[in-house]
Image (cartoon, rainbow, N blue to C red):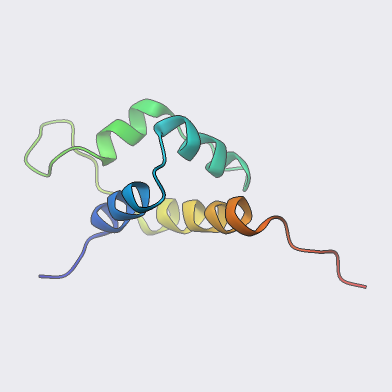
Length: 78
């Protein structure tokens, strides 16, 4: 069984002990707007009516923001 983007996102959330507020702030670091209700839909079980699949762009933006959150912004090139 392959992992879906939703599975990866859930595992990262648990591994880094992130709340929905933390995830919203992390996404804002890369100018990606996300609401708590969107996150709730992504973290639901697949058989739930309100389940939403996490797209590649959503996960990519979150990962870019997570890098900035953990390491800090990239230094300016000379």
